[in-house]
Image 1 (cartoon, rainbow, N blue to C red):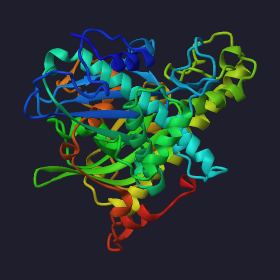
Image 2: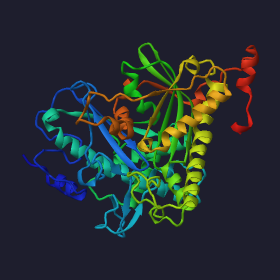
Image 3: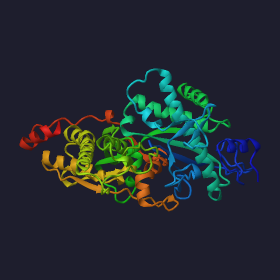
Image 4: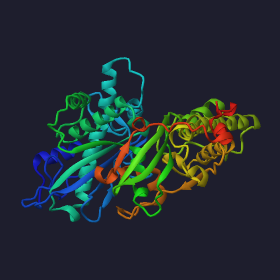
Length: 476
């Protein structure tokens, strides 16, 4: 069995092994004479993270919903090959490559997702187009690699099947409620898919052309159903389908390298379908890099803290185990940590809680019985994460009547996810991609915040109601 010559050139252009698996040149199908009569659905769950990209591919109607996390092999991060650094290198020739390898000199870009989340209008339309094209180039190259790996690794399970592809592309919960940001992510997804099907090297020029085609609604290269899905809904799909599921109000906190994303949502069912009502969401650039930057400013004499991390996947340096710090420096670092934790707690987590308590779901029984909360993301393992949560919980208990606090929850590890994924790895890194790999019908209905009306204030609750509406000095 051989691969067609153009297929070999394509594989070589993205640095893949040609192997013995017969594939069509678009890397969408096996090249077999008698494929299965009925197509098998494959859904690509694409988690376009700030620090790393994760991809899970699932067959919803075959092999009991088998889902596989893509192994990016030598392109993946050293800590786990399932993590693809969200970094590209623009060579002087114009070609774009995944990663920041020294064997390919050029301009390294690691701000691909952050640029898409900016609400301020860039200096020019060309600048925004460039941001979008670079993100699309990364997505296209990652998709090429992901599909090739999947079709090679899963030949035994799918070798005679004909596929019908779909892709769910994640967007931060707050961005889902913003028409411009949501469309940017959809544009990147469409353009990236089209780029992944081309046999040529990906260049910035070709990426810009693909973005423009996506703007025009061109379907010449987009032969898959592509949806943009809020990451918070995807992250809890497994929970919603598990035995530990509870209906009602929930909080999800996702701490990453660059951002902290908090979303309050209602989970319930209607006629057997899951419904996610996103009540309130907040995204701030207060990820762990912001904490590291604060420590750099606080302790300029500590050399270990004076390097800006080039690898956004590894944990940021900690200072608490250093024994040679002077009392003055230690105090400055403690203040920096406290300011960061307080900012995340007040400006993000408590802000969302306060909005929900006052206007969105003030009568939820979970305020009194314990508000289910999930803390996820690559930064959730840092020692400051639980402190952020505890401070917001303490403020809620202090300011609100009959508020029990949080009920910590852990996302269940799905049995349908192949490969022996460790629980911490799934919860910190792969839960979004896994949820995105469900077909949109099985994910359910997602209502954005602006589609949900506020709960009218109830003035008949006397003193308790007055206290709930009162905003103290420590809440300002």
